Every structure is written in structure tokens, then in C-alpha cells.
Image (tube, rainbow, N blue to C red; front, side, top):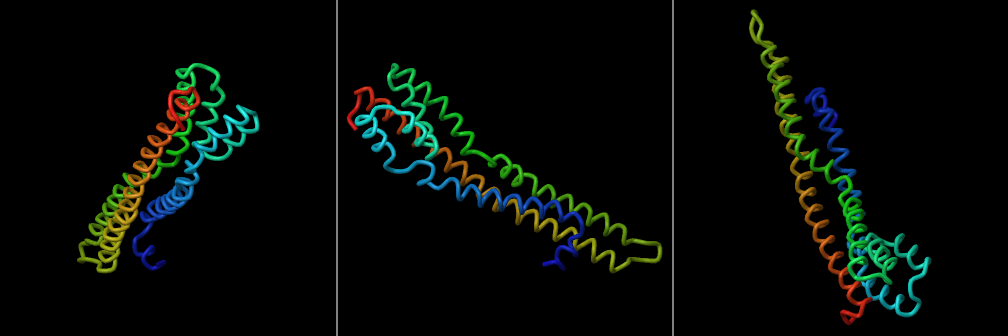
Length: 202
């Protein structure tokens, strides 16, 4: 591995940094965007049951806010449960926007890496081409410099694609997953509002 990095030259280092950051983001998002962590399945029924038995308490709101992103949205609704449905929905929407920002954390960085990795690979290719042209001397071609320039050009191009393709795949995957989760949480929040105001059966 070190031999490959050495053959690729110094332009490979920004790509290596991008790959480490991308792997860290992918691992963190895989862990944080688990469905049972973001929106536990039975949370809505538990919230409705707890509200009917105990009403709205500070302990319940704290527990919900610390439990999951969906719990944060439900807590915002419960704080306004005594108000009109429109006000309750408005509070839920405001909380939902904050939750959306949290769920989308680091995704912009991952998308940026997916976009710039091929450009960094192209930059390495240009450096390699410069090395190749530098191999031309009045006495002839220096084969060592020529081979080094070719290795820089090819390794950086390949590594740029190796970093960009998985980053783009996971970026698209996470974006779609977050969008689906936000829609699901919105539907559950609307259902909570309708149940608490007697417009719908649990």
C-alpha cells in the first residue's frame, strides 16, 4: 500500500484525506440513521397512552426529547396539546425543521467529497502529465521520470474514482433515507395531533 502511495506522488494525499473523512461520515451516518434510533416503532402508541393516563408532564417531555428525533417532534406537539390543532402542528413543523437539519448532518460534506474527488484525481493526472513532459530532455527521454509521471497520472485518476463512487452512492442512499424518515415522522406527528384532539381514533 505504501508503495502505491509513493508511486502516486504527493497529489494522492488530499485524496487520502477525503477518503478518511468520507469513511468517517459513512460510518457515523450508518450508526445514527438506524430506524429504531430515529423513530422507534411503538413510540406513537406509547405517547398517546401516556398522555391519556398522565397528561403532559415535564418528565415525559424530557424523556421524549432525549429519546429520539421522533420523540423531539412529539414533545414539541405535547407542549402545545392544550392549544388549537393549528398551533400544535406549527410547533411540530418548527421542531421538524430542526430534526431535519440534525438528520442531514455531514451529508453536504459527503456530497462535496463525491464531487471533488474526481477533480482531485484529475489534478493528479495533470501533475503526472507535467512529469511526463519533464522527462523530455535534449539528450532524450529519461525513463525513470517518464514512468514516475505515468504512475502519478494513473494512480490519482483511479483513486479519485475509488473515493468518488462509494461516496456518491452513500450520499444518495442517505439522502433518500432521510427524506423517507422525515415523511414518515410527519405522518406520525399529524396522526398524534388528530388523536389528541379527538379527530381520529388511535
